Image 1 (tube, one colour):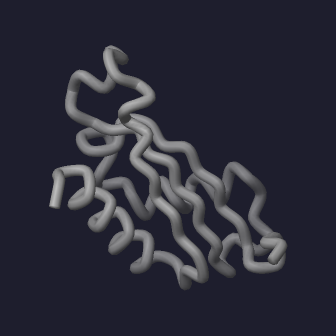
Image 2 (cartoon, helix red, strand yellow; image 1 turned 180 degrees about the horizontal axis):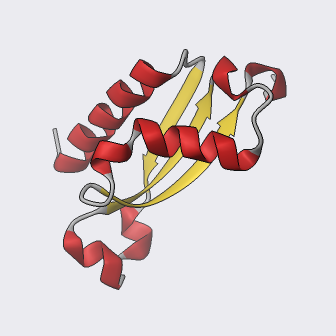
Length: 94
């Protein structure tokens, strides 16, 4: 298992501790930022798409704060940049 796969697994564990996750996708987008000055410290660029009932009634800022709080121990060492899409189950179209 690569270092980024280990990181993603740890991110998922921490998110599952904080949310009743119905869907979760974590993508490593570090390759899109190769040579970026901030990435030189070893932190990666990740994209999180998460569906959980805890996001119901929260605005965008509150949703992002909740995700950042869940992943706080990984920032900035393992996560340099994070793109977040946080949805409630009611907002997901099937």
